[in-house]
Length: 203
Image 1 (cartoon, one colour):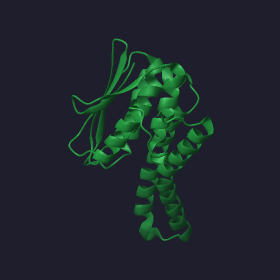
Image 2: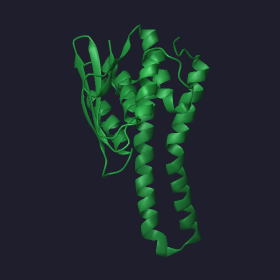
Image 3: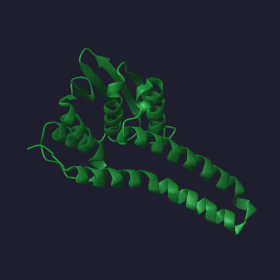
């Protein structure tokens, strides 16, 4: 049985996921503003650091979410921008000691949104950094992930979802539900790659 959700259910999950991914840094900005209002100059260095880091994260994530979940626009046709936006989003995950590195080689802009959503799905499986590669082969889009520290539980849930098994309808898996809905409308297939690490393919 497939994970078929209505448009409103998917919208609710996507909104919840985006809110969850932004609220922490919004809270940090709010705290920094409160410190500014108190006027204690002893914390000025910390305030600058908080505002710089949090605003950078918010900007990178909002740009990514706008392209991945928003209405199609000309930015999706700019493959260099798609790659940069996706790479900048990955930099906001984890920490500098365990980065998620990206290699993206798209040729068809029509695959941009699907590639970004797939990267987001696979990025959620990393615990301590790793590598994601996106490339096109004849008639296929491949999204490959490799890393020593991965969540076996999340990989299992993603595998079940791709194979049509019912999974819990939580905001954590909003990108998967959204991608599956998009591919169903385009009459495209989503599959699992397991022979070289773990990844997804679209054809």
